[in-house]
Image 1 (tube, rainbow, N blue to C red):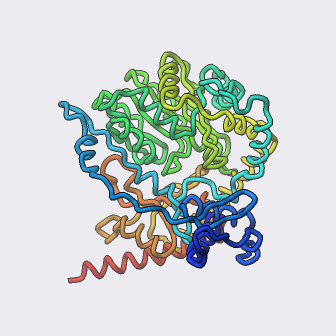
Image 2 (image 1 turned 90 degrees about the vertical axis):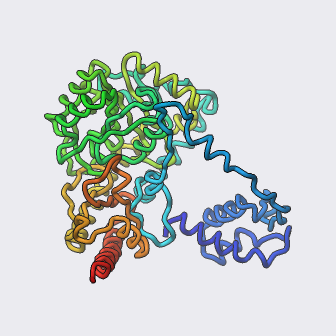
Image 3 (image 1 turned 30 degrees about the vertical axis):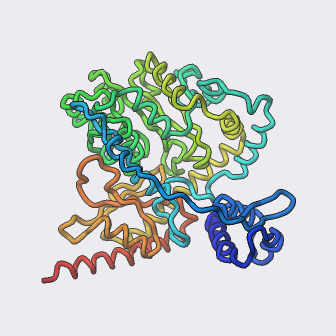
Length: 489
């Protein structure tokens, strides 16, 4: 059982027993709870902390936990209806409403109910995260002189230099800004490169978090289709001409959600087309550390072969390490770097130094290389297990590309004429005990077909994958049966 599930279960049990105690009365000791529920001390501590955050218990160091006294009468809510008018826009001609819709992102961030298999997750399963190496790095970082002092606004020089080396030999620390993860870097880049109301070209399908960030900045995403070799240069050039856009956002390596790699012959074409349009390419290199061990040599980042500053490079440690290690980088050349720097300073000043120090300790340790090799092997094994299970148990779902990096598979459902309903499929899967990501949020315009994304990186291993696909087959068969019933006269 996942640790967070154990904590939630124990907190629920303790919550249901609180009425046995009078306000101010002491609860059983942590040791007795450990013995009674056969839980670890850490689980007990976290469950009690959860109740404390809910205001149900009060903890006193050295004394224990006590039932909290009930709070006084809660005042009635005020009238917030005026906010609808205020948030609807400034009313000026041509103004683009700045909508903030995080629903597509929350699909992969929100934890499903206990017992539900996470085929919708976007991060490595806890068993794949380098928890011991992270703990050791954090401990070493805390002992560094000045670990809690203010860092340079651009980030620690040593960490910036490490990211620069990862991008390519032409980059130096002076070209890099440390960011609070990849999502923050994308949001900063979009705000820096395009004014509100402007179009921004995006791959179709693409990462919902980027679409949300673009819309929150008042930008208008315009889709450019991808095929098995990545974005199509002919359609990219046409989109630049038709829209006058000055930004194209792409994931050339293990694109999310399709897993495709931009073909060698298209790489220079994409940069050339953007350069001729006077536009920037935002390269989201999120999955370079999630390569599978059967992938072969990887292409270099687009930024590595771009001397003219067309490419703004985004990368992060988060996907390969832990959701909470929110340390990433923005790399750029020319005047745009100063604009990126200014926006980041205004938004957040800097990334906390202890987190940067811990990241530096992690990537500088032998454990980092061992971890990446282990992840490479494990992701390939999980990908293979899911591919085999889907082909045997759900042959009706079309898997057009098997990726050699990243953590998900992109499947096409039969067309709507066959009775397929993407939303109904996702809902039925959740009722069957498996969470999947619907395809609709990955498109900024009408999707060409119903699709779903299945994650194999967020699960415990092949056994859980097999069980998840079994549940998914149950949901699929039920969806088809319901659809067939509704079509009968």
